[in-house]
Length: 329
Image (cartoon, rainbow, N blue to C red; front, top):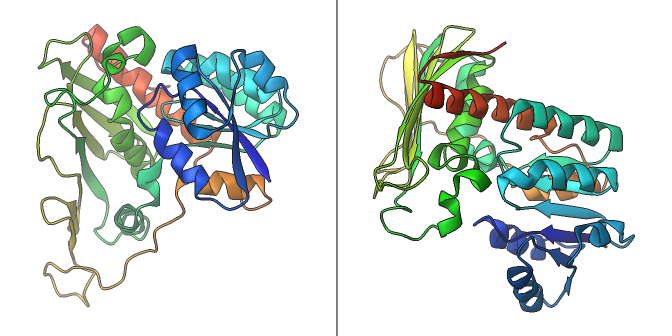
C-alpha cells in the first residue's frame, strides 16, 4: 500500500488530487499537513485521516511514502526540498517556484534524493494536444511559424476563485502564473527552447494581481507563441492554433473540434479535414506518478519540465514589471 500525505489545501486543485488518489487502487491517503491549521484539521477530519501540525513531524514518519504539495507557491521551495531530503516521492501543483534559482535548488535536491517527482501538466495528456505535438514533430504543416494558446475563465468577475488567489506574495502573480501555466508549458513542449519573451498584463477588476494577461514568446526556431489567459472572460473555450508554412491546425473553440488543413494531410488534397484517428489520451499526471513509484516508467512531466516552466514564468513577470523584452540565456 502506497501511503500519501497531502501538504496543504491552499490550491483549488487540492481536493481534485485527493479524489484522484482515492480512486487509485493500492493508494491510501494517510495524513494531512497544512500551513493553516484550522483548514488542515477540518480536511483531515473530512477524509478520516491524521492531521499533523508539524511538517517536520509528518516528514519524519516512516509510514509516509509520498507527498502531494499544494501549498502557496512561495512556500514550494522550502516544503519540496524538505520532502526530498526526507526521501518522500513528490507530486506538485504548478508552477514549481517563483525563480529559476529556487527551481534549480529543488532540482538538485530531487536528483540527490533519487525519488519519483512529477509536476501537474494535465494538458499534455489530452488527445488533441498530443495530436498537435504529432503535427509539429512530423512537420505536417511544414515549419511552424506561429502558435496561439488561449486558456481563460471568469473566476474573478464571477467571484468563485478564493480570495488568496489574489495574494501577490503567496502566488507570485495572478492569472498568468496560475491558469497561464498551461499555455506556457504547451508552448515550450511544442516549440522547443525559448529565445525571448514580452508581456502585457492588467487587472480588469482592480485586484492586487493581474487577471487579464498576454505573453508573446519567440523561440530559437523563429516560431512565435502567443499565450493568452485571464480570470475575466465568460464563455472562453480553450483554443490552440498552429500556423505553418504548409498548413494550419485549429483545436478547441466553441465546437471543441480538431481541424487540419495541410498539403501532406490528405493525399495532397488541400482541404480542411477532421482527423479520423487521434492519439490515445495518456494517464493523468498523478496516476503516472503513482505508477512510477511502483516501478513503472518515470512520469512524463519531471523536474526538467518544471524548471523550464519556471524559466518562462520568471521571464514573463520580469518583462511585465520592467516593461521590456526579456532574453533567455
